[in-house]
Length: 399
Image (cartoon, rainbow, N blue to C red; front, side):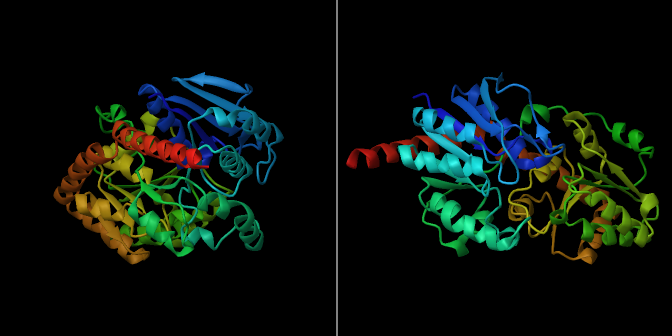
């Protein structure tokens, strides 16, 4: 049974973070397993308020990408809506990524109208932390939910969560659609052979003996950098030669704020700021770090955590990162509360006990390979697709 699958995501800008990485990798692996895959998105690029490509359609790694012009802030697109009207009924299933934007809202509405099964992946948007906030206006967000997102969610064939914790955090909304839990994946082929140590340290200009703490991800308030900076100040008091590498793209000039905190704490000369890296450089950063730290206020999954684990790097994460239980059970790192002292203590513990850090890194690599590879994820997702398609066919037949 060939499944003709349509993925819909509002944009594929590199700086939009994990969802774009997931959609690209997932669709590529689905194509490998002979699933007919199309990705529908907009030309929006939030790095420059322009487009991501000059072509309305591209074909890459067996996946068809369709791009449509859109206008901010909701990314409204007449051409995309027309395309859904004319073409969506030809797909077996629609996999929608995200909420609160026109592309995903329109895709769900048309899927409901033409009777095509669809599942929505909220990517953490239903977490109470984000639910109570809005980049623009919370009142308008509630109105949008009332008339668009909640009806789409409640009539979805399923809501796709990446872990049990994400599902539980959304339980207060009492949505009608059934949940399915399937994690994100990583391309294990990229981690079979890890780069030799030393490259990232040479890039920073430090030697192999310098304690190195790594943060890698979007520079955004939700990532807990306001906790990490004072925590690292405490680390420097015990390990004066320690260094912190903050690697990732800046969101809304947040980097300037982080730099100011470093100045106020007197640790700016201990901190390196590095813009977004490619995959090989990212792996070099992971393998050279003594510990990876992500003290996020909320994280629906935590793809960088799994990447660090795949590179054999021990991790320190907050208990608001939704795979914290899996990390703890695997023995891959330390889970802390949203407290800078706890973060500092955990970092100092691993810097002082290299044997324990190495053991955690080894456990993390085993767990990443066992639970978070794309072939495993695609197999689980294909079973869900087939079940939802059959359920929808039975429901349509009864009408």
